[in-house]
Amino acid sequence: MEQRLPLPPFNAITAAQKVRMAEDGWNGRNPEKVSLAYTKNSQWRNRDQFVNGREQIQAFLAAKWEREHEYRLIKELWAYTDNRIAVRFAYEWRDEAGQWYRAYGNENWQFDKNGLMELRFASINDLAINEDERLFHWPQGRRPDDHPSLSDLGL
Image (cartoon, rainbow, N blue to C red; front, side, top):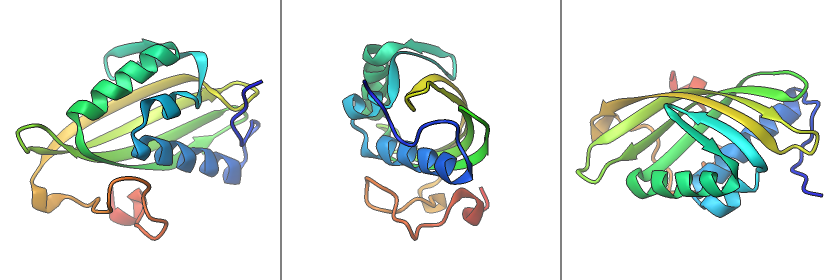
C-alpha cells in the first residue's frame, strides 16, 4: 500500500512538513517523482486546466518545466484541518525570450488516509518582472533552509 508521510489528520507541524515536502518535490522538477505524491486518480484544477491521474500529472509537469526556465518555488502553509491543507505560494521563472515572471497563487489540497493528495485546486496569476526584481536566487533545486519565506520577503 502506498503511503506518503505525514498522514492525516494534520496538526501545525505535520501540515508544515507536508507543505515543505511538496515545495522540495516541485523544486526538484522530476515529473515522475512528483506524481507519486498524488493518488493514482488524483484530480487537479490548475488555472484553467483540468488534470486527472498520475499520467496526466506527469505530462502536465513535464510541459510546465519545459517552458518555465530557472523555476524556483516557495510554498507557505496558510491553514489546515483534518485531511486538508491550504497553501499560498510564489515562484519565479523566465520564458524562452528571457522575460522573467513571478507567479502568485493559492492551492487547496485534500489527502486520502494514506497521505496521498487526491484533490488539488490551484489559482495562479503571473506578473512580469525585471531580472533585477527577482528574489529567488538559490541554485536550482531545494530551497536552502536559511532562505527567507514568503512572509519574510513581504510577498
